[in-house]
Amino acid sequence: MNEETAMASNGKPTFADNDIMLHCDGLTRIYREGPQDVTVLDALELEVRAGERVAVVGSSGSGKTTLLNLLGGLDRPSAGQVRIAGQSLADMGEAALGDFRNRHIGFVYQFHHLLAEFSALENVAMPLLIRGQQRQQAQAAARDILSQVGMEARCEHKPGELSGGERQRVAIARALVTDPSLVLMDEPTGNLDQTTASNILALMDGLAERSACAFIIVTHDPALAAHQDRVMRLDQGRLSAD
Ligand SMILES: Nc1ncnc2c1ncn2[C@@H]1O[C@H](COP(=O)(O)OP(=O)(O)OP(=O)(O)O)[C@@H](O)[C@H]1O
Image (cartoon, rainbow, N blue to C red):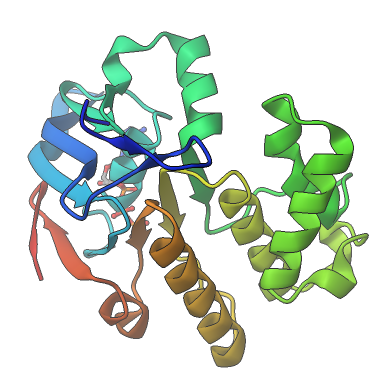
């Protein structure tokens, strides 16, 4: 976040259109496996503005998951850096990085990673409880976002009692409930029928408009990619406009 970032009346930072939410500079990831090094990301550059949605496409093995893991601070680069909302992930120790992830980053994985023993409502409220919100307030926010993804009637169900598409909607609600700076999505509509997928896209449209949240969406779905502000192709360790 730059120094000129203004404060809105609710105390949250506001962003001009050209504010950079995500900046990757010389991002490199080399896997040192066996006798040969494998360079998966090779001095990759990327800038994403606040409120912008970028689809990342690329063939299998091109490094899309590797990139998402670095952007989310789940893995460390071999060289180069990732800055989110003006802060370099490289400067943070593990505890600070965990706290930063909770405050600034939402993840939607292909296999949703919901906690099986907790209800949909509890899963979605969890990131708010972790950051110290009162249970009642966290559950009210969780209920609100679950109803926005059409899951209000399933709040008390556990993941095992939900369909694949329903689980994915809960995962999306969990990623969005903290009003993050950056949402990282890996095939977010992969399991969903067309109507549900359209509802999710509309929800993402609304969130991107209302907040400064930036989205990086890894997908093989041409329709989902085309719906975003920009499509970038990952090839030979670099990103270029598709
Ligand atoms: N931990 C690891 N150690 C060694 N090599 C790895 C590791 N993780 C990934 N790779 C290799 O890095 C390359 C990129 O993998 P990655 O999973 O990022 O690709 P992807 O674009 O997400 O693929 P897909 O679309 O099939 O999911 C692959 O060649 C993979 O074998």
